[in-house]
Length: 476
Image (tube, rainbow, N blue to C red):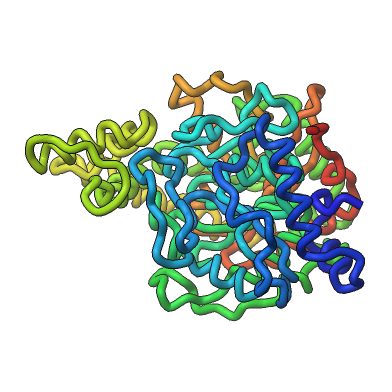
């Protein structure tokens, strides 16, 4: 039995039965990372030494470590958003999700690679270099949580945390063949998440199966008074939703998600998944989300405007990279010019322009109004449906370098995922097929706000009646 290949819930059972130990799991993971990760580059650093933290094995999670995306603060550990401008930054506090994981008996295994400040869909913009897809090392793992998804897919981590602003958990989960959940906005505290776009960001799980996803969300979710956007809602035990039964559940299929630009192999796998859910008792109906055609334009105004505002604080004065110049303004200019990468600069400039005098009403304000219409589309859909379903990404994983110099093509990679963030609803990616080149394809499940239980019910039923989640990439 190789511990690194197991799910967390399987390891918990083995630990309870005294058939393995926390140290054995930790040592096996570190050995696996040392052997395999040089060719994947999912991690940018590992925490601690070879010894398992001795005081943390008690609790619900029994000392099972977790990989953490590099934009989630871990006290005393390098947390840089994979940006040169945050070089050397060690947070003086834990993010709330890290506190809750430690309280439940887990601990961070290490930081995972990501697109700089979560700006990207391919994990090619990191200052530490690219991450490769474990299914084909010449292809991207998705982004921006590409390191987390690749680590879980390659059995370098049992599970991981990512963040999702426009699909950054779900898209890499789809392209790497793992499970990824973007919770409802406000379900998981953002305290200690280095912000990209504050009205869109959410932390969520990346796991090997649906049961682990429910277990992890149980630990990290819940109200946090330190996050003003955190929702004061009852927190259910999401594991109770893991029922192999969707009979009578109304599942909507948005016709706009099967239009021009969707790869044929992806469409075939998703439609076969829809047929499977119908056979299992789901009531399938076609619906319309008429404002879907505006989502990319709206997102890249709202998200870049918020990014411009959030990243204004990184000026090299108190921490991180600093390039001294003759005066303060020159120091700001040179530090930011050299500290931010190309995509970060592009988004800062787009957002600054959208917020500038004379353009705010024409761009940012109008985008927020259309965002309201996009949310109303979902509100209307959920009066007739319990769940919506479609593709996660228009294509399977593309080749490294294929879109890096074509920003619009890269942005369109998130066309199916960004409406979820604009509307604040929960969504999940689960494996549903493979291309002829053995590349994973993900199925996208969407639910009304705070209805993660519906997602778990549908995802678990699909998973229990298919074998896609059992296939693993051949990485050694």
